[in-house]
Image (tube, rainbow, N blue to C red; front, side):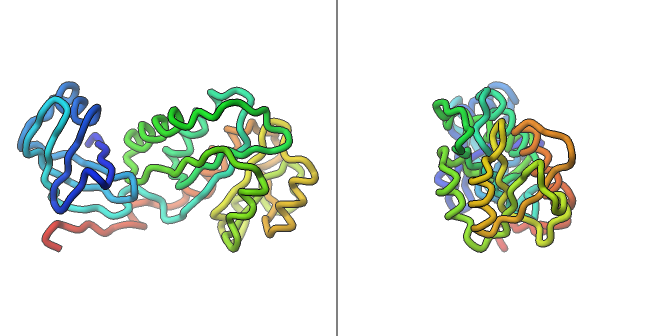
Length: 245
């Protein structure tokens, strides 16, 4: 079933209102009509089975039939802090693919070797929304504004964190225990020795993705897949709640 999106402000009680492009797509492209059932996600981890009550070109009213907490979400919360890529379109791909895999938060990272360009925040959010809907997720990843490595390192505190480095002599990423909830990935050219040492001094564990040198966006996708694609979402979040519950 195709997934539609309604932010929490458009959900009240047992009613969902789809607006703008979402409503237009439902009515004009998908040809949905009153009485049909649809699936709606709110971007915060909740999905709703809903029945269409009334349709207009730019507004559709639905009644909630059942609620599905953490629908198609992985059990592990993963944040990726990734160096901005020289080619902006590669970061677009990174956002799309890691969203599909299940990443909860993406932080564009500014480092000494980052080739800086204007952030494409609105484009990244649009890409993430489309990827969320395509993959059937119920959570829209947080997309931060670009931040310095020092600022990012000050955030994770006691969160299990790993920094990827091709020269790591320790375990591979999927061999770390406990599983990291925060992964740092450098830009083209990697982290400097000073940046790497700063991360280690703040409690990061160093890990690798193997002997081959990967592009930044490839490393991000590989890291997300290793951490998040090991279990079944259905097994992790089986609960479904109906309105009367």
